[in-house]
Length: 122
Image (tube, one colour):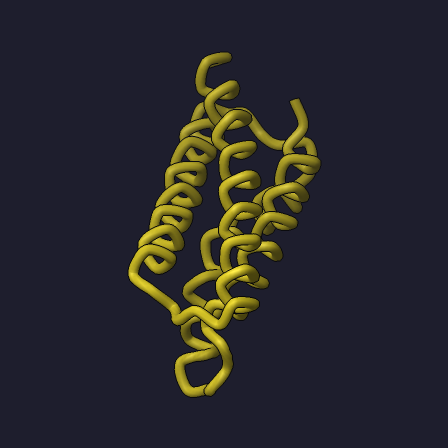
């Protein structure tokens, strides 16, 4: 089981770093006034899938009886997954810069990931 715990911890770090990179990328795209392109969209989808994989690893730990130090860990983990679909739903009827919105949302998700790490325990 230590291998699964280690995988959960490592993927958490990857999620944080990945969304940090997505956030910076989105802000740069917004700053130079580039459109919301397929490369950035694909990268966001990869980030979402990464969050789902992390949740599946976490659920396997839960099913084997391992629990986080703080129950808020579940809230932060779930928030990482639902944040991008909520942003998509929210901005679908607005005329905001999509790359700026997703860039800021990615930085927010990075923060959620950091909080999930701090509440998970080891």
